[in-house]
Structures are given as C-alpha cells and as structure tokens.
Image (cartoon, rainbow, N blue to C red; front, side, top):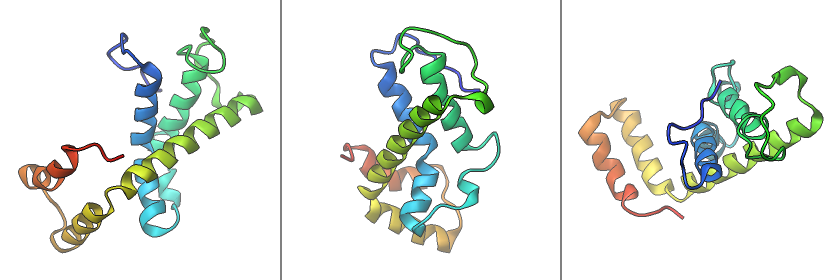
Length: 143
C-alpha cells in the first residue's frame, strides 16, 4: 500500500502524486524507449513498481480525495473488485505518467546512451562518479 507523502501540506498534492507515478513507471518507460517494448519484468508481482503505481493511481481517487470521487475517502480499495470506471481512470493516469517518463528520458538520451555504454564496460558506478555523470542534467530542467 502506498502512503501519502510526509508533507501533507504540499501546495500541489496532485502534481506530487503525478511525479511519484512518473518515477515508479520510469523503469518500464526506459525499457519501452531503449528496447522498443516492455518485458514481463516491468510488471512483476505485488511489490513491483507497476503494482505500486497502480495502487497509488487508485488511492488518488478512492482514499486521498483528489480524483473523480472528489472530497471523499472510501477506504482501501479491493483491487479485484474495482469498477470498470475505476480501472479506466487508473489506466489513463498510469498511461499519462508513463508517457511523461518516456518524454523525460528521451530528453536525456545522449546522457543515457553514454551512461549505458559505460555501465556495459564497468558494470557499476558508485557515489561521486555517478553524481559527476548526473550533475549536468540536474542543473537544468529537462523539458
């Protein structure tokens, strides 16, 4: 189960949740972008990023009072008993987040490609070395 951000006083909780969904779906988006398709590993079990993102998308509507249900909390959703409308809203929210993740990744393709080549040769980057690679991209907004 996903927990609401620690900052309950977020000035824009919808944007914060959209960002979280984008992060959760970034691995799946990277597979789609880099490999042309996603694997079953992009879904996984109940503790996978896709499962967590799906749960969050449903919670936005059913528990957090930020979705189609308005200012209402209906408690924890039974994921197997969701209405088709609830499933469709979650699906649309997830597709938007995945599309956003793809756009963000695409805007950094030169860096991602160089980093992937480096990782193929060295298998891992740690701490300061990884920060050196990422620092230039963190200094400016990608879109």
